[in-house]
Image 1 (cartoon, rainbow, N blue to C red):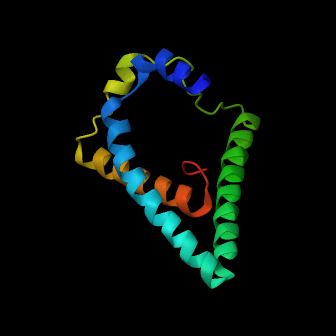
Image 2: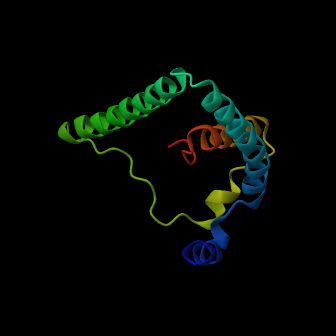
Image 3: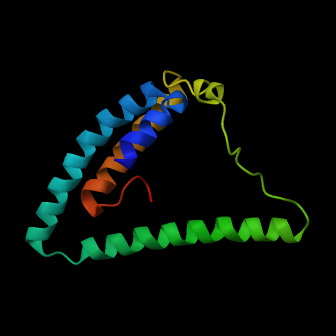
Length: 126
């Protein structure tokens, strides 16, 4: 019940073209990831667990480096940029999905997110 309610309340802040495009590539690549998971499970390969471990280590070091950079910046008296807590509706309109660069990143996000969701059952890019 909470997710549909949130979606209804935040509908003004949603870039519908972005969501629709990501869903198309997400759905396709999630099927591919799940098929690969089933094939790996049948072969009993140890590389699947190692791959998940490496991916989680990369995420850990990424998050640690972000935390470290924020801590160092605050110790030096500079504050890290803080995300605006209540974005305006116009800020979402600035992200044009049909711009070539944004389209490429939207497709990559959809493919990578769906593949990881299907393969490791990890939503988004963790």
